[in-house]
Length: 146
Image: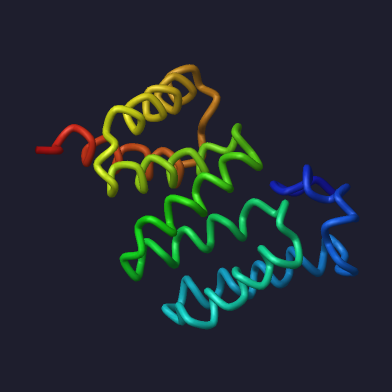
């Protein structure tokens, strides 16, 4: 069974005794808490996952989300950069990085990454509506900067 995080499944040495399925299930629980507004529980789970499975990119995105939510933009940027380092092909990681870069006022770098995502969308390589909506929202934010 292929998962969006299948590149992680072979990294047994970083999972510290947890199977890939257990890591995925723990992540889904953390994501459930975040989606339902329980930021503190979601944060605890995502932070724990980054320690137990530091190569599991989605947990870094979860931490970025938490830090954006509470206004810790520097920490959000660090978590987004780590997610991007782990999977530079992940458009979601790139878009989180763009959001954080704009929050820090780095519109030049953000624009470069937005251009990369635009090329992939226009080339038909991206069809997931949530990714496209996220991109469009960031593009508007980028274009409306003052």
